[in-house]
Image (cartoon, rainbow, N blue to C red; front, top):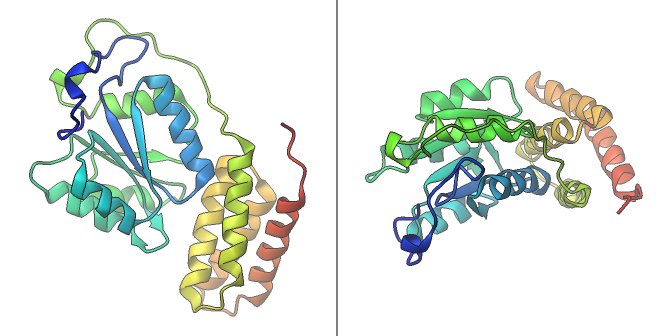
Length: 239
């Protein structure tokens, strides 16, 4: 639990249905859609959630609170998530659980090399997987006792959060910047698209990433990404 939380003594103990009661999870994630998934997973598990959307915001938060669990997306708008993981892994006192997260294939190795205790691959929708990844890395005295039935629940984030992500990236694409902006767009949209099971958007993000990695001009790929983002923003969302 938060080491500086004035209400910590009143928080109930974890139990079989809410195994993360008493824990505060800091999620450092710039995607609203991915963070909505995390919010639902924490809610179902009994944990409280705090969110930071960039490294700067996360560091400000960590100056005031020390959460029990920190989940760090590796692709953030103002730097590398693995840099923050390394800072947290070396800090004293250390956060109980540090987890990296990403949809990129190479990111798990980066997170673990930086000092993460574990890794959550996006999309993160399984309640049982989320709970087990956190609990397996907690100190033994912090885990709930007794038998616990593994939930087969799969969470579904609000699609309005997906629209928020599209609006965010549309704003980013309007800014004339160097190639780093396009690298961020490709990484961000690839993760969101996989989480939302939007294959068309995912393919466009992958094409942009490949072009950037090869050092080729990416005008056509970035224009296609912008077209799909505009299309997604005009789609009607059933409420």
